[in-house]
Length: 123
Image: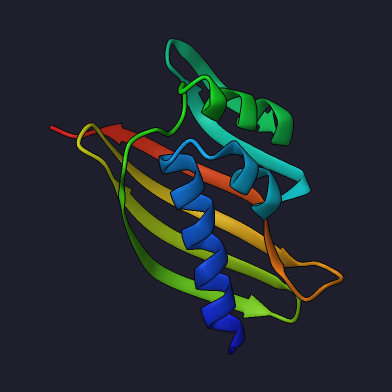
């Protein structure tokens, strides 16, 4: 399988795991040093960063995820074992522009190490 296809599959698995609130799959696709970085979190202003455990806990509590979204990968760049994907996601309530960073692990599998979403409400 070509690397771009493997990267697309990893991003799709990441998004679907969140949409399905599947914390087991999410734990498997996220790198141990994963960080989610976003500007604002409900009433909180400024930059908010969640590590892997906090992110999974937010998905388990259905604070994040739980709603199916469409996924469009609009840009995919990779050099060696590092990749960056720009993805557009849309649910019935929210729209996301996410920059998702991935790294290849020692088993030649792609894992998500960073997610940088910009979130807006759908009007």
